[in-house]
Image 1 (cartoon, helix red, strand yellow):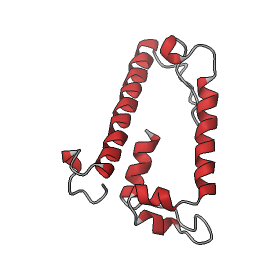
Image 2 (cartoon, rainbow, N blue to C red):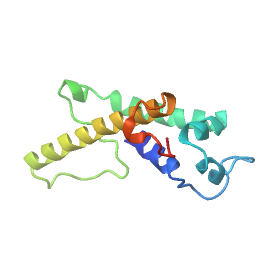
Image 3 (tube, rainbow, N blue to C red):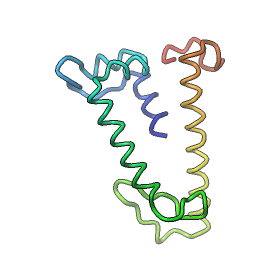
Length: 131
């Protein structure tokens, strides 16, 4: 979901104020398509992003029984949310809906990548300036 949201935020020109590095502003990156903006990020910045993602994955994936094998769903949320007062059936329904939203976000980011690399491959995105 974060990848899809990040792509759309950049595609629509939303940006932080200030400088990313001494010679690159966030505003200049927001004028590029998301793939060109990623290419313009300095290697040190890319390394920080990838390291943060790696640590988050390591923390959530290394806990006992994996959630796809019957273990508890990942709970790495900032700040932690207390669901103790939510009905168990409702909680399961909401968790399933969230998993489905995540799956849809994965389909979306792959569609964005395909549209960027193979013109016309995603008809709904043809002639959209963000792609």
